[in-house]
Image (cartoon, rainbow, N blue to C red; front, side):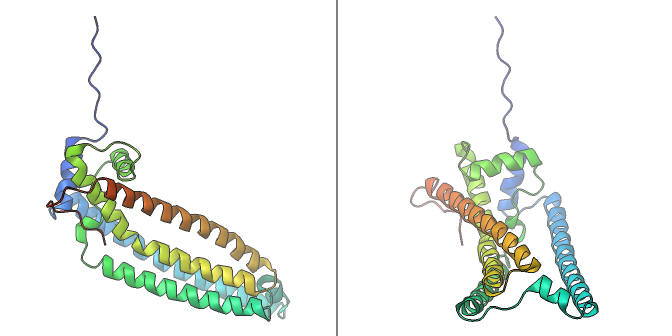
Amino acid sequence: MSSAAPQTPPVSEESWDLVADTVAGRPHPTVETARRRLTRVLVVSLVAAVVIGAGAGLLVGASSSASGGGLDALLQGESRAGWPGAVGLVGNLVGLLCMIVGVVVFLVRNRSVGARAIPLAGVPRREQQWIGRMALGRVPCPPHRAAEVRAVAAGKLRTTASTAFLVGGVCAITLARVVSTEWSVVTGVFAIGTGFLVVVLVATLHTRAQWRAFLQETEPPAGAEPVPVR
């Protein structure tokens, strides 16, 4: 008679302890390394976006000047008068407001988060994905590790709070461009980009709703200290 081999837990106790220490404000050195790496990636991405955008603008401007303005009309299209122009103006204002709110929310909510903003830093990728599925309510969560998973869900809510505003703002601006200009190459690019941003926005809102549902379902009993969600 053969006995079944014991099943290996999807997340090791060492990883759970690492998450618990990070949430408690005692991050492992690997967490600090991950924070610095994330900061470098964000800075490099921002600089690259600015350089690429400026280079593309200069290239289009130089090409337009060389072609006597014909290429500019082909690429950018002409503004539409009447209600499309009014809709475009409103869309640009709404989009700009949403982006400002998104930046403010990002700065305020991540100002004092520290290492707790990335409680899964230092955890192997496969185990990060498994804990992430727990935070989304897709797989059962060990009762004795509910506090750690709640902290992960709360941290993801906190760090992505600005995403909906930023993506929604850019989506409003690109949609305003599509509505307020005649069809052109740039208008087509903006239309494709708008469709992509709508998908990203819907996915973001859906995922945040799943995190909130998990936090509501695992709300600790009255008198216990809950994980703060801002």
